[in-house]
Image 1 (spheres, rainbow, N blue to C red):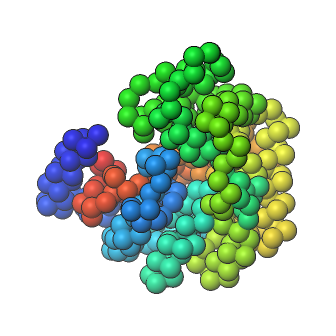
Image 2: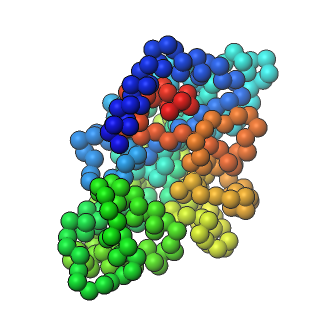
Image 3: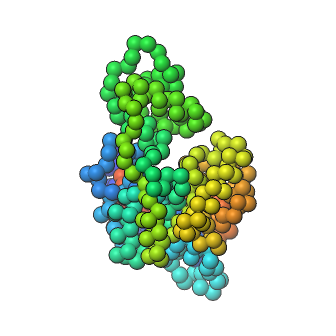
Length: 339
């Protein structure tokens, strides 16, 4: 992995030295726009062993991203983008729009990303899993990752246990590779199967509960940031369940309850409530349900730019994470669509 990243850095420097990324961005028409997908923002020296690769950006790196974006883009909010229709007269003269989005509503956004946004007067949208906001609960992926840091270093028991756990325990490679494989294995399982694996892991490790630590925003922080006029919010469902694995009534409950809570807490504008599909998984029927439940736009995890005729419920994004965007050259190539 390090060799691949080093090769990409050399390539990015070469490409940037002849001005290709900037030229590619400037050649985008006014109707094309870019949506960036971030997750967590915190210092590299605070990264916990169980944090998945690709889930964070260092605050200094994020500050650099903002400088680059302000040079080449109009950085706007989702609300502004969808309430403003460029005219044919000026569409070629304006810089392309870029929208910053953050998934999951992590607590570190308030500590590290929000001050940078205020300092630079740059807007962003956060998608909240409403059932987790203001609680000490963790996503199952993070509970699993935390437990695997212990389980992977423990000897396997003599007696066979949960079959799924045995498959996970048999995964080979470095911790990050094993973690990614384990999460991907469980993403296609139902909630009960996932919780059974986690319970078996806890029993094997002799642990009764995951750390009692708040990792998500609370509603006071959400309301404060909304009051700044820079940070807007949308839904990431209520329980962060992958919708394609649910029955239709379960999907509608996730959508309706999340929207109800966002409105009750006064953190969204009823005229424009955006949505983010957990894990990026969707299909035409789910997109229709999102629209029918009163949402106005929805973002995926599919990589790429959007053009003017893109469906507002199938918006592509470009994932941003530390290892691929730590340098100005690599970030520029990333947003230009080169790397």
